[in-house]
Image (cartoon, rainbow, N blue to C red; front, side):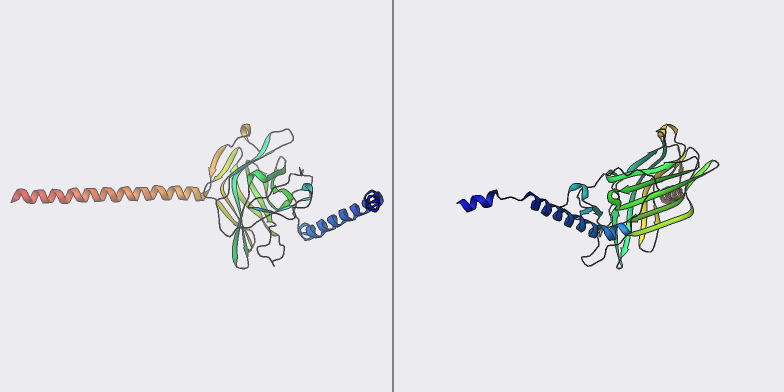
Length: 286
């Protein structure tokens, strides 16, 4: 009994502290090794943009790398899905230095990844997006990013005289590997020197039909529906809508289709009345 009591009270605080430090170093080493490849391909929004440090939680679209790590050290990565689903629509607003909106965008965003001759999908969840960017007189940037930089979507706006447009669109997604033996991979894409979503000053670009952009052979971005406006936003709301050609063509097609249907109906009715009248005249002669 005496020996047991001695073993119970003989506690070496220095040794315990060393064990705790070694355990902490192991965790830190594990974190560094786990994140090394992920962080090597890290994509960032423009310099000086604020990262508020909001972390995601586990759900069907994200995976947590290690449940045993402290919450502030946990990272989450997008999970690609084998089937396509309608992306949720979110409205993103960026304010300038005086607190007035300079960019407003409403859209659903879908990442389409091609890996090993198979197509995978990931939808951007508006509730998990961090908004950053900057506003200038003739240049503005809107960056939508998931925590831990799992995915991002960046728009660069240019204003020329009374017209504004997106001159650069970049995107990246760093998902969980699609198979157990697949390596970690980041899919990136960039479109530049284009004039996308052109609208006059104080007006918004609207496209309900959506846009599909081929970023690379492995990554496509679908924005549907899309309404976007930069620089001049009256009272922070969208101005007059400028429709995309796809919406105009669809509306014209519906008008033409409706006119054809009505025309065929009228022809059918008139033909029926004409035949009926001819039959009646034949009966009267008899």
